Length: 327
Image 1 (cartoon, rainbow, N blue to C red):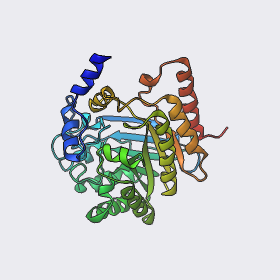
Image 2: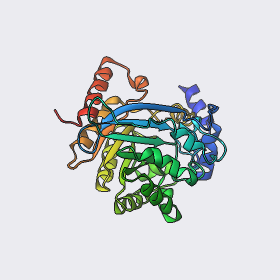
Image 3: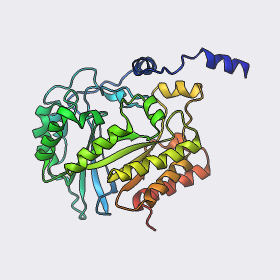
């Protein structure tokens, strides 16, 4: 115990200032994976609950582009990004891999396209504005197009790009996914996201005003919170997403794997959430009145499974995801 205490004392403490936090986070990174800048680094098709209450077919492209301008504490998406500004034409080349007719032929289903780029779609350094038209030529064949953005790119001079892309993909509906993570102000500030809950509310209001759908990513038990606090603030975060008109909320168990969270775990500031906590937040979110769909992310869930009870919990979560709490 004495040796463990001495080892913890020797660890560099998590800094207070955003600039020093960024250095601390970067110092704990491993190498990136090399990718062809004209090819998506991943693609898959899955079904998820659609806005009409039925299951929709979702085509997802994981775009290869420049790394996000923000260095979030919990992020591991940087591993598949580029160190240079994305060249014009690169994203257009990546979306060219989409099928000309994405709709399922075997049964009528809504069809969505997720263009996830490990950052902000409306950051021109990540997705050049010159590529919007080529992207739209593919995207408008879907019912819904979902992209990611930090709140910083949903205000000021950036809104022109948002509205231009919305117009370009018509008649498809634009949906913007924001990583709110948590409404626990202190924990959110320590995540190094450089945004506040007020920033999120402002962005949500802008999207609502322009009839752009809102999707929200929320962490279950982010660093610096106990298990009980993780559930409490997960539910509070769902409340805020609901109040702000989110049409979809995705709950993510806070995962290690980026170096920074492992260092925080050694200091006692991070412990992976229990699957039962993830399920509790999911059930709460699905109990809220209205049309907000709520799912829990089961990607790479195996590290969280420690027992038969955990395995049964995963089965229940999968059923809740598909049925949205309906019997």
